[in-house]
Length: 357
Image 1 (tube, rainbow, N blue to C red):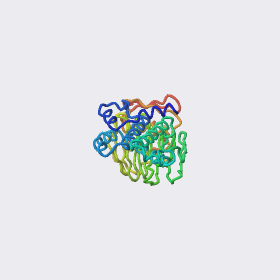
Image 2 (cartoon, rainbow, N blue to C red; image 1 turned 60 degrees about the horizontal axis):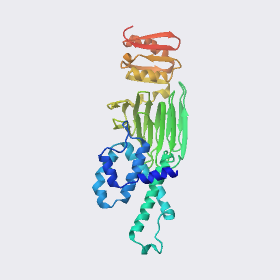
Image 3 (cartoon, rainbow, N blue to C red; image 1 turned 90 degrees about the horizontal axis):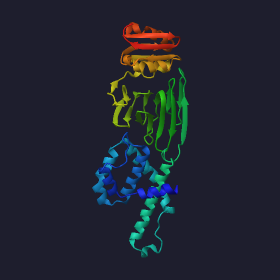
Image 4 (cartoon, helix red, strand yellow; image 1 turned 180 degrees about the vertical axis):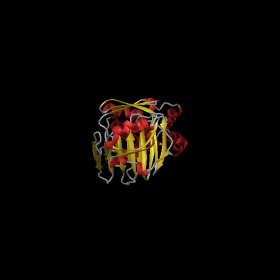
């Protein structure tokens, strides 16, 4: 801890120094996007620099600070967390910080400023050191509420959260939920879930799903996480979808809209029939010109066997209503309506290929 604190104090610098590093492109941002720990570390330095700066240097360097904030959503989140952490620690200054005793007035005013700066540097060291060992990784000390759930193939499960929010899990899905003082976070590690979020303006609800992040206050929406994409469809309200890695992108969705987040960016917003969202809760799947690359994972979440899809057939589109009990019949009937061949070499083993039968 002592070593971490020493390094943290050495990293505290004036706003001019940060301005020079920012303009020179030496803020240690990794090529594949901002690292949350490094973003928090930079936020600590910005906060300290802003607090020690007077009006003139603050105004002169405001553009540099705003450029840093705008460079990534992670920067803004890190600065918000850092400022909240400071608000929690600052009251300790009245107990452990510098005080002006009876003899302090006899000293030069520079001594008081030096003591104040020592307190600020100490606070910076505390924030940086604590962040380094992970105490602030969950934003403001510890979660106040945690729950996790998972489902097997063709299984469904509903989580009733402490604030009245609900998460309905589809088959082969896994979710973790953590609530903190200033935010609510759900990690969709695998599969598909329908979220019905209770409104709380003071604690936004964030769904982290690999390639994409969804932020809301109160609304209803579905998130589907697959290896190469994250799909979001909105039932009610509005959500903000973010792609945190380069190319960093953001889009706002309203009810009846959906979007896919992929390795190359966020695809164009599409209209979605609200009544088709979450039909898996009624043991039925509705596909409206859906590409087979989306159809097969949806079927696989409800099917105990293996369904393989050749990449050449992935963009072929299907319109169908499939009961869970009819999945094998649907697979066998695909060649009658689509330009595909379906091999069935063994029970519960299906292979869809492009081309006429």
